[in-house]
Length: 216
Ligand SMILES: N[C@@H](CCC(=O)N[C@@H](CS)C(=O)NCC(=O)O)C(=O)O
Image (cartoon, rainbow, N blue to C red; front, side, top):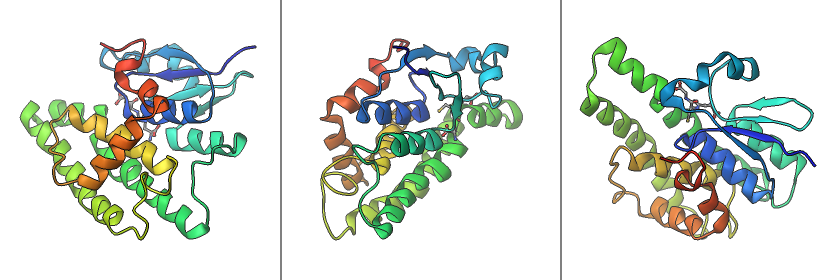
């Protein structure tokens, strides 16, 4: 039986999100690496699949290509309902989506590779300035995220409940990215504890950057 193709890059945190979701849903995919630092995401063959030139993409068995990690994860959750990636109850689901979007909409877009590259090529920023930029935008959202998680009525192991979901997926992928820019995690004990709880699980370990075939 054919498998979907996961277009990925080991260091990409959005690909990491999707790798976790695929593992949680028990979906096996063929891994196709695109080296972002070598510009392979802008090769004609890949642009024909995803004109945005971004990873991840998920090429389904019938050739349909899905793009945007959050949309693909939502597709997986709709088509493979177990285990659910969102909690019970409309309010808690909105809260879980909000936490995921704090990372996906507020941190990642301003810290993506092409943005960091443009800071250098368009504005003369050096490596230190770029790292400061990265850490600034992490702190701007991790501080309120830590407050929200610390204020939860139920101090569950994962963001919402005793099983990991969408918010945990985004959190873990962002924490991994933070390491590359030496983000100090001491102000974020709740985020750190949730990250550790997730990383005890094989589905998260198997999705980690270092476990991918293109890891360097
Ligand atoms: N919002 C998109 C963002 C995808 C994205 O920006 N991916 C990054 C890697 S994490 C990428 O492909 N960057 C290529 C580049 O910056 O040239 C998603 O969630 O899938």
